[in-house]
Amino acid sequence: MRPVRYLKVTTVDAAVAATRAAPDAAFVAGGTSLLDLMKLDVLEPAELVDVNALPLGKIEVAHDGLHVGALVRNSDLARHPDVVARYPLLSEALLAGASPQLRNMATVGGNLLQRTRCSYFRDPATPCNKRAPGAGCGALDGYNRMHAVLGTSDKCIAAHPSDMCVALLALDAVVHTRGPAGPRQIPIADFHILPGEHPERESVLAQGELVTGVSLPARPGFEQSRYLKVRDRASYAFALVSVGAALRIEDGLVREARIALGGVGTKPWRAVEAERLLVGQRPERAAFTRAAEAALAGAKPRKHNAFKVPLARRAIVRALATVKGAA
Image (cartoon, rainbow, N blue to C red; front, side, top):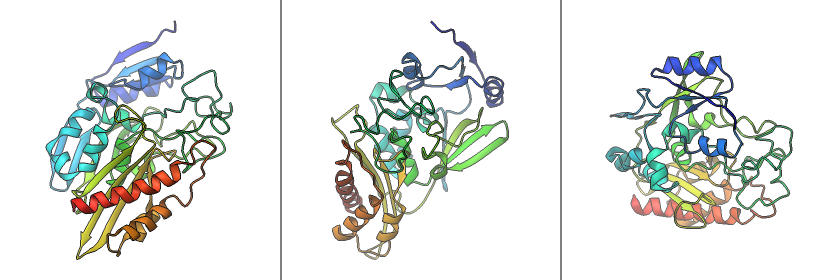
């Protein structure tokens, strides 16, 4: 049995100081992912810094958007009336994730930092560059049905698992942090990192930097947004493909589009070219199909996950058609 130190902090400054002083420490809030990985011997922090007492559990509503504290539970955020009305995509994404029991414990900050569900990452007996840099990637030529087809490298093809992050990406969220260098505001598009040569790095966070919250802007069209998740079973399953979509339609034309994908990327994936192709077009199936083709143009499927490419195209068309119907 490995001994693990435990420290409970009551201020953000104390949390930052604790992990800065102990590089082998980890923040713990809901613990729904971290404790899992510790039991599997995938993660081995020597100290857990409990941040649950920090004043980061509020949802603040303003005319120009929403600010969500990092300790807000997923279930509370999903059911919040302003989220349901102004950002239905986010509510639907949260409710599509995990189980009610896990959503009651999981936090917004923890979800942002959720680790991949790649079976090679979660099994210390197999090679994984994300878990042990330089060990190799067992998924490249192994069983890779659940793995990514976008943003991959020859070091890692693990798919990002979060539903919430896909929604936040489509909604142009900004992540707020506090670290040894002070506070930062990071657009979520820049928050997660592609694996490249260093798949062990998954975000731009520095050692000791704590996520304190997320802000969402108020923009026309976000009320007409939807989340579509395709998975092996109806609940408690990770996405094969997911789509977060929003459209602003005026005078019969798409004036602004948002498309984010999950289950297919090594990070939450924004389909920027697909969005561009939709602007100025009539919201019809032909335009949706062209956008879907563009979204998967750079896909690099492997032996077992090639089905994700046509599946993602169809899911994008369906999600956009659903948003059009809601608008």
